[in-house]
Image (cartoon, rainbow, N blue to C red; front, side, top):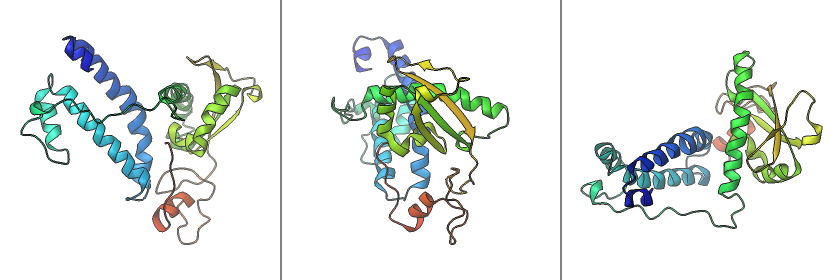
Length: 242
């Protein structure tokens, strides 16, 4: 973005900011973090780390927009916490954003793979919605039949895969075990995956809306899942990635 500004290619600035806001933020990151923002303990590390990330994004985004969308950027900047300059036009480019290190276990390539898989899972869930089998993605359970490389990659998310897919349950199975009626799709990285989705048979937690097998098993909170009870009465769940 900064390079595009330096070369006066404002159309590229527009394209990159729009893509960032609609694809990476709007249809992925903001979608995924809703669960931890709404359901984790208010002072949990998972929730606070997300708020910190959003703050950094907002600081950078308002400055990217300031030269070409001045009044909107000014208004947004005035509502950010912390000491502000008289005008955002007196600010410098935000320097606190950091790229993931090369040896990060879940690097940029990993998350782009997850984003691509979400693009494959989405139409499968939409078909269930169209058939009135499910109302939302959280009503579904998903099985990903993956080749060995992709399965090893996605196993890094553990149980948090379901949060990345925004489903109540997600599991991985070898591609060789996929039903004959499922077609495998090839990702950009040449890995293959086939998707199966079904409506969950478990009760719905009234707090997080996930369908979990432990809903109804706690006398004090018969309508809540174990995760929500931990977030209300316990130390709170631990999140690592999603």
